[in-house]
Image (cartoon, rainbow, N blue to C red):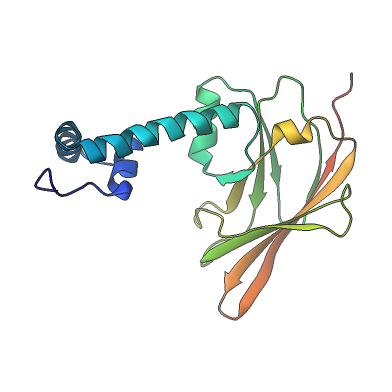
Length: 189
């Protein structure tokens, strides 16, 4: 990144946005953004996307894997986060209070050595239907998948059961590394 004609990579902009660059790199990026309209526009697009993701998250419209750090940041920002920690092979009775803004499932699993992770969701509200989420981001050292559940979709639902199955992708197929059962009840009131 020596000349203004050499564009910044999206990866480098994301590292900087996440605070993962040193001060010299931060200064070089700032200087480049001031001189390069194309990279400045890309950075502006990132900021708009960031705001859209924040709004969707606060409105409970996201269903995604996340980092434990993201959950910590949401709590630090004052959001009401309800969390359920579930061991592999375990189950939990769960609900969602009217004031809860984010619902987090922490699926504990042996992730060391796992290269790819998929999740299958089955609900008693849709018997026989299996939803597959592929290539989930995860930290193999964490020993858990942090999964944000779409609160706005869950809140109006009646009592039901959801089963999540974590699959480690390997050469030649996949293997189950954890199964989790959630017995959901609507908030009383």
